[in-house]
Image 1: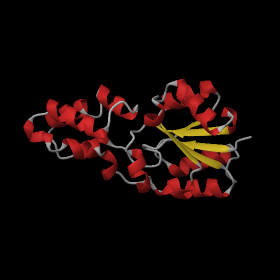
Image 2: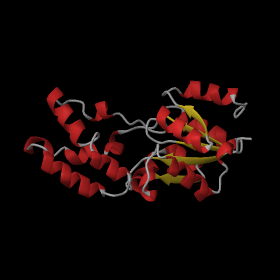
Image 3: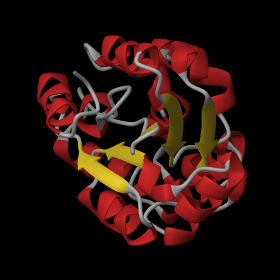
Length: 199
């Protein structure tokens, strides 16, 4: 029996689109900024809680030409340019009203604790578990085990919704049921109905 619905955050609850954040730059600038920020090892260290946002911004500025240094802070603070996924708050509310416990399991930085109010659906959540707080990143199987232990959840009583097939696959090895989210809330609702999670 499914009792718990677990959501990822980026591209599930809110949009995370690096192409959008890098709009307006030349192709060479986009390549450089993407490499130095979103595709960097330090970006992973930020989400693992090993770097603060301020430390990351300082390091990025040292690797960029002067003309781009002023943009580092804005680009790192991606959440200030993102919007909730249309229809997701209503779906979460429906799941909450049907009696499911709702949880967050996301790779994200400690800044989440400051920007979480920008995500309206979180008011229906029973718990939040982020990578920077535990020092582990999906798809490491240990994060799913730690998440379940933290909230005293039985893995096979959980459905995990994430936009990354790799994350869903690794969660399944720990025993969680999974649904890959393809940016289509209507399709997700249909899948939940098919699994008899929603009527």
